[in-house]
Image (cartoon, rainbow, N blue to C red; front, side):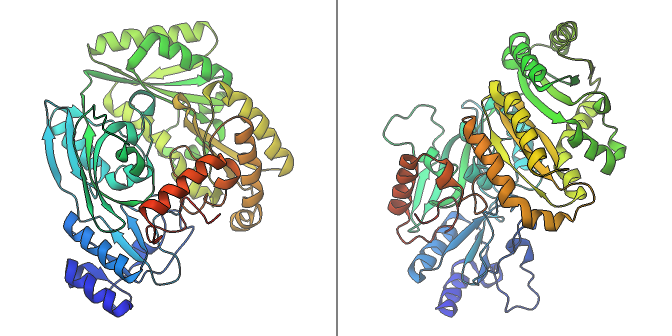
Amino acid sequence: MSTALLATLRQAVGPAQVLTHDDPAADLSAWEQDWRKRARGRALAVVRPGSTAEVAAVVRACAAAGASIVPQGGNTGLVVGSVPDDTGTQIVLSLARMTAVRAIDAANLTLTVEAGCVLQHVQEAAEQAGFLFPLSLAAQGSCTIGGNMATNAGGTQVLRYGNARDLCLGLEVVTAQGEVWQGLSGLRKDNTGYDLRDLFIGSEGTLGVITAATLKLYPLPTAQLTAWAAVPTLEAAVALLGQAHQHLGAGLTGFEVMGRFALGLVDRHFPALRVPLWQDSPYCVLLENSDSESEEHARARFERLLETALENGLVSDAVVAESLAQARGLWHIRESIPLAQAEEGLNIKHDISIPVSRIPAFCAETDDLLQREIPGVRLVNFGHLGDGNLHYNVQAPTGADAKKFLNEQEARVNALVFDAVARYDGSISAEHGVGSLKSAHLPHYKDPVALGLMRSIKQALDPQQTMNPGRVLVSP
C-alpha cells in the first residue's frame, strides 16, 4: 500500500516534493522532531505541496489509502502536535512552500495569505502597506500563519487585539475528504449558520488542513512606548494592570509579568542583555502603550500612570524606553526567558490561564505546594498577565539531573499544577494547544458534555480518523 500511495503522492506534487528515508540524501529530522526535542517520530514521507489543489490531491490520496496525515507549519509548537508518531506510516504534510500574500484590501482592512507564510513576513507585508497585523510571539520568525490559526496562537498583544481567532475573518480549508472549503470572505458580519471558521481555528489539524487565511489589519500606531517596572508583589502587579486600563484605555497593548528567577536565568545565560531592576524586586512587569495621537501624548499618559503607581506603592522603580532600540531590547529580554530556561536544562512547561483577579492567590498556593512536595524545585513564572495567561514552568533543583527530574517528576508536577488550575477555575492550555502532551489530561479537566460534543464533531468531519490522530482528543 505504501508504495502505491507514494507513487500517487509523487504524481500529485512532483517527485522532488515527496521526501522519504529511502533517499540517502534526505534528512527528515527537521520534520520528525519537535522544537523542544521532547519527541521524535518516523514518517512514511514528508510531502510539500505548493498549492491548495495539491493539498487536496494529497489528502484525497491519503484518505483512499487510509493513511493518517500530520499537518505541519513551522514546527514550533510546544505540545508535540505536529510531528509523526514512530510507526513510519504517517504522512507529514508540510505547508512550507505555500507562502504567497494573495491580496491586501486596504479599504476592508484585510490581508489574505497562504498558510505557509511566516508570521514575521505577514507583519512586514502589513507594515509595508501602512497597516499593523498585531499577532506577535517569540517564534514569529519561524512559526507560520497556518500553525497560528490551527493552535489559536496568543502572544504579547492579546490584551488589546485578541488571539489568532479574533484576528481572522476567513479561512480556506481542505477537509478530511479532500474537498476545498472556500471561506476567505473578509466579511465582519455573516450570520448564515454555524461559524466554521471558528471551528477549524484551534483544532490543531484534527478536522482539516488550513491552507489560507484572511486576516484583520489595523492602522499603524503613531507612537508606541514601552516601560519596565519593578513591583513588590503579584497583587501590586494586578492593581497596576487595573490602573493601566484606567489611564491608557485601548492604548494598553501589552502587559507582561516576569518573576525574579525567570529574569535571573536571562541574566545568567545572556548577560549582554542587561536585565534591569530584577535583583531588587520579586516581579517586574513590561507595559506597552500604543497611541494614535502623538508620542508626546503617549509619553504624558504613560508618565502619569507610573507616577501614580509609584505614589501608591504599586511600583518601586521604573524605566521608560527612550528609543525604539531600547524598547526592542526590553522585549528581547522578555522573549529570551524560554531560551534561558532551555540553557538551564530540561524543564516542565505549563501554559495555563487563570482569572486575573485570582492569579496572586493561585501562585501563592501552588508555589508553596510545589516547594513543599518537591524540595528545592525552582519556579520559572512569567507570562501575559494582562489576559490571565501564565507560563508557570518548573525547573529541577540546583545540581539535580534535569533529565532524571523530568522523567521521574513530570507526571506528579503536572497533577499538582493542573489540579490547582482547576480549583481556580482556569484552563490547562491557554495558547499552546493540547497536542499529544496534554490530550490524556483533557478528560480530567474538561467538561464531559464539551468533550462529547468535540468527539461528535471529530467523527462527523473526520470519520476515518486520519487527520492528526492522537492529538487533542483521545479515545474515550
